[in-house]
Length: 139
Image 1 (tube, one colour):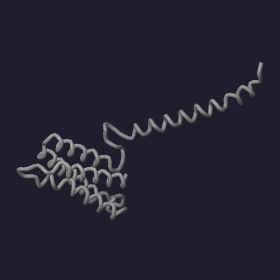
Image 2 (image 1 turned 180 degrees about the vertical axis):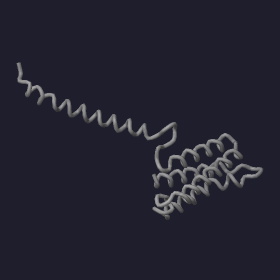
Image 3 (image 1 turned 30 degrees about the vertical axis):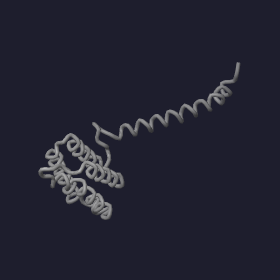
Image 4 (image 1 turned 90 degrees about the horizontal axis):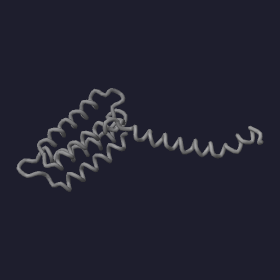
């Protein structure tokens, strides 16, 4: 019969391996937990979720609905920045705030200005993707 201490030493590599995989699984699970009901639990998550909704409406052909939700996105953004105090992105990183604001305008303006003819889908998609990329910089 082996000494209990020797059994413990022999099982350490297995325990370390199990701990490593367990930690990796916990990290992967944490990443999955970074969303609540499909909305990223991050500083820019609400803006991203609204932009996805706007773009989804546009893809379905509901330009008026996309434009209306786009207005909600813009108002939410403006109010958060106006009343966000010292933690507002406009105060902590004004350059990035301006970049995101411009990207949002480039995404939403074609929807707001659509009258009889919907905007070019490729241009809207490119502006949407550019806006999402800018949001990532502020998360």
